[in-house]
Length: 350
Ligand code: SF4
Ligand code: SF4
Image: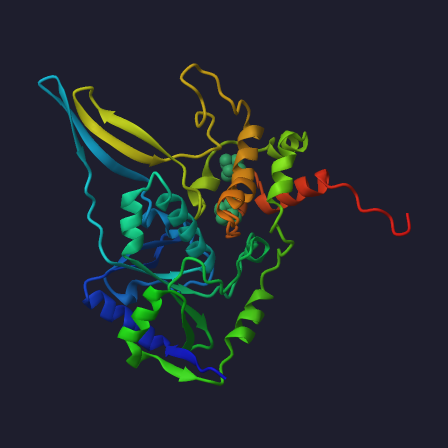
């Protein structure tokens, strides 16, 4: 039996203290009023050891809501451009959940593709994700239905799985994770009485919304013109909360502020549920109603992205389900559409 690595809770704190002492930026969940959010901390004592998902995912640490891209100025009739040069520090992202780690990997997939987003790529290269297995799925969660799970490896570097009040099983799942463990190997011990497979299997049983959406992409895409989309999208208000709370939504707009003589170009988050998202300069909008915009959100997550990149863009974190003011539930909607467009099963013997 291969011994699993184990680390005590106090040695996890010691690992984080060492990383802080090395000059790393440490980003972890902290309490902010009634919410738990990811923020830079100066000490391990500031970390909120929460069980449930944070209100917002950690994506804005790598993909800020608003980010300067360049400065422009008209000097003696000539346009001068100067690209932004953000400070990018070695960062340790701690206590991310596996769904959010997978969301970061989806962002990395998109922003590493051409045209590449160099700011994101540089940040991602300098980020180590120490993430924790999910022990308490929330009411909206459905990670296993989209090919992930409470201990999935996508997007993470070092996985910690809580074994009891004092100990975590530690699994490096990337080169960055292996390098981290090797550099601090005095904090980890081998234990052959611990079985990752059995702990992971038990955690998986805690996820309750498990009806699979894997492989559903083609059928969902084929349903594009089906009337069902008018019904399931009717309630959507176009508020954008789903995209702003989603760990994998990555649409942005480029806007200029300032005067025609001098100003700044900014990259700002955008959302396909907004009425202005696809509006043309002529005033024509190819997604003329909210139902068409809502359909786009679901089909991009579960149809178009899997077709292009081979995985569901939705990681099943459940945030949009919990936070949508009118209760739009992407998991329920996708299954409703699938059921509606699937021919009913033939009666046995019929
Ligand atoms: S689905 Fe819900 S959260 Fe998303 S834009 Fe529509 S109303 Fe807002
Ligand atoms: S679409 Fe909803 S459930 Fe899926 S990853 Fe985004 S916020 Fe989470």
